Image (cartoon, rainbow, N blue to C red; front, side, top):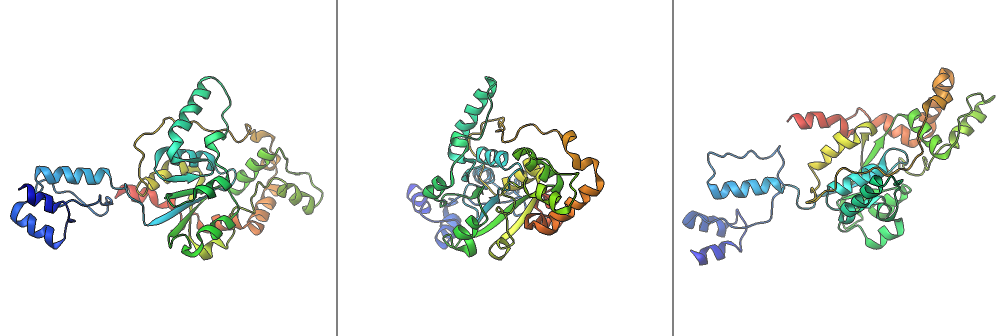
Length: 319
């Protein structure tokens, strides 16, 4: 019996050798854990013996313990909650590589943030919560399943375009936020005001562009020629979006909870934002943003379509 089991250990399930030994000796050949989703497998307890039941349960618990066939990228558009999303993803899942945090040290990084919070200190994305682009390039992306990058859109095409990164297919995820609300968050970041009383369109639009925080740099339609690009709702990123990715990425063994938010903006007072009190100006700016900013054009087309991730999560969770 010992020699039979030893022979079985060297062969994968479903192989001819394994099938023969199982038929004669009821042994189970070993194999790598299988990625199994709830859409693919239903365990029949009545037909499984005790040993196979243990194997099945172990397989289900480790359904995401290998690399997914697709590499995922988070296009970090400024002022869309990307710093928090990167930190949460790194703390929750393995092999997340981001400008605002990596999985391998996310636990201790968040524990330090928790201690600062307890001491009443301000918490900013610094230290291990901020990994600079040159450092990321030195590390490389070979051990990453999910990459969050706060850089120009050319980073994606230069590094991964058309499967140039070890032949890997890549899917990019873009956060989408209401245009006007997003604009005012950027104005708050740069401490700028919209010229609601401008005498000319040129003066008004100049004040709008002065608020942009790398808005024209992070996304370009060129990305659509190189990658599958999908979108998700800014308001649903910390629940629906992370729930969706939990079916793809491997959950970390240890997680530091709760995640402590890193401050990147001063408190915002919408009462001081003049556009909400001037309907004509609001509509004029909204039209300008949609006509001139590729990022807003993409979100306008993507949100509500089959390419919106957060629009399909509810149906996914019901299955």
